[in-house]
Amino acid sequence: AQSVAQPEDQVNVAEGNPLTVKCTYSVSGNPYLFWYVQYPNRGLQFLLKYITGDNLVKGSYGFEAEFNKSQTSFHLKKPSALVSDSALYFCAVRDSIGNTPLVFGKGTRLSVIA
Amino acid sequence: DVKVTQSSRYLVKRTGEKVFLECVQDMDHENMFWYRQDPGLGLRLIYFSYDVKMKEKGDIPEGYSVSREKKERFSLILESASTNQTSMYLCASSPHDRGEKLFFGSGTQLSVL
Image 1 (tube, rainbow over the protein chains, first blue to last red):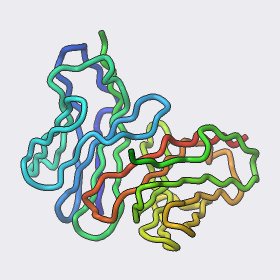
Image 2 (tube, one colour):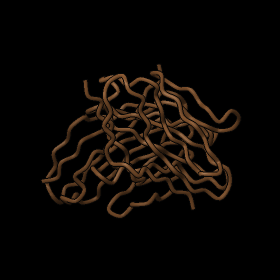
Image 3 (cartoon, rainbow over the protein chains, first blue to last red):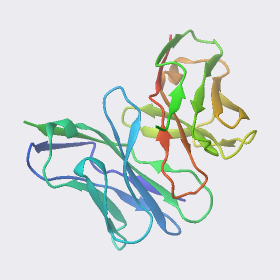
C-alpha cells in the first residue's frame, strides 16, 4: 500500500530565509512524487513532480524538491521565502506498481512573516 | 488553458436532500477524481473513474455515488445529505499516464444544515 506523511502541520519562516516543508512516503515499487500548493479559497495548483532522473527537481515559483530514496523523503525547499508563499502545501505519491490513484498527505500550512 | 470546472462554488443544503455536484473538464482526460478536503485530514479520495461508465471506490465512498456518462463530465451524488458531509469537495482530472499531474477545479464548499 502507498502512503505519504507530512510531519509538520505548520511551518513558520521569516521572509528572506530558506524554507523546507517535509514529506516522507511509502510505496511497494518506485514512487511518483508530487507537490501541490493551495492558496485561500482556491483549488490545488501543481508545483513540481519527480518521476525519474535527477534527484533535485525544480518547479514553479522558485520551489525545488529533493528526492532521497534511502530516507524515502521528498522535501520541498526554497532558498528565500516570500510573504506570498504563505499557503497550504500538499505532498502526494503514487506507486509505480498497480493502478491506484494519487494519495495526498494531510498538508502543511506555511506562514512567511515579514 | 486547461480547465476543470465545478458547477458551484458554495452550496447550502438541508439534511436528507439529494445533492448533485458537477464537474466538467475540457482536456479530453481519461481519469477523473472526487476528493473531499477537511481541516487536519487533508484530501481524501471518494470515487474515481479511469474511463467513461467506469467507477471505482476510493477511501471514503460511504454515502456517495458517482456518474460518468460522458468522458468530460463526472458527477458526485450525495443520496441523502448529512451534516457530516459538510466539507470542501474537489474534482480533478488527469491523462491516463500514471506519471501525469492532476488538474484541480476550484472546489465546492458544501454546507449541510
